Image (cartoon, rainbow, N blue to C red):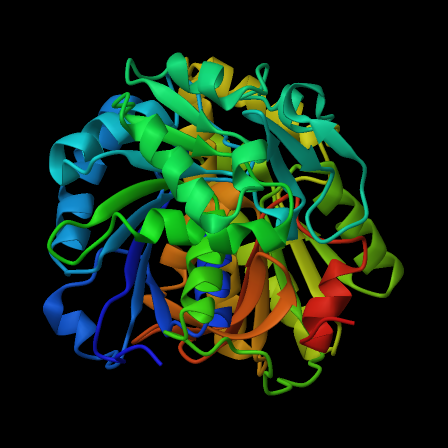
Length: 465
């Protein structure tokens, strides 16, 4: 077992749901991890003794490069100071980014000045999540935790048409080259299949050419341990290695540490039990989440549509939030599970109506994404917070990557720790929220693409099928 007093890894997530994804795979690997809303101070860390992993749930996925840099310089410097051999910038497994918003290239540029490591490992493939990288090209399953079809990313029905960061290039080297001038080499799938000694030699040969970034292919979960070992060999507490990628980084390192007998993976979890009613707050417009809302309503969930146009107009928003909280509380007291939502799929008429309001305010597309995530995520969190003050429930689910960070902040959450699995990448957690009615609550945060149609029933049940 690893020394419980030693930090093994720190990570900064570009949104909340992606950060809980990394939290899950570290915890499964046997790394006691807490995910914080802000970089924790020494005083705050003292309230969480024995941590080996420290995560920070950020908002950078929806920021401009300039805002990202202003946020990440102090955050990454603070994480570096904690003495972990690994510091990971956790990105979405579909590599959501562009030169003008959520720029992963800018992150690498900033981190290179802080860490000065020999190279930046880049691992985006995460087979457990239906994400595969072959010869530098990323493929993604339609929906995480589902049996959806697998598409090359530039042909993915959802990600290729993303309203802000559409993936029109599946080769991650080419996609990244639009965001940074740093050079990316490829450790391709044929090298990943080599025996460990030959793989190490292949990596050394690549590094002899002094690339700034090395992208690792990944097809099978069984390949991640080798990649983790290759990465870990270049990391130390004195010279921490900065990496970028999906939770494949956590999976790879965890698999390697298990083989090295540094950790004991967690395979058994206490049953948290079924709850009724369940409260769901959705800020997602994904077709996957739309199907989940429809399934929940067919199974007896009540719905509380949030009036996003009024909130966007910045007029009478408090009344809208109060009315939604009152209706939510009324349904919960009657014993009905509830879904509060800002849209039901991309064709929800509220989306077009809200866009008109934002356009009337003179906002461009990037400003709309940032502001809408802030407004609607905060509103959802406020509705939930007010509703649970008056209702004796114990579990809440929040859907939507962009809005979850703001919802968590509105709920007063300081940190979360995993207490059990639901679907890969979206664990059930315990919330630490001093002074908030959400303190001690069971919370589940999921991205828009995560889960099968009966996802909310699984969350209510508290465990996988």
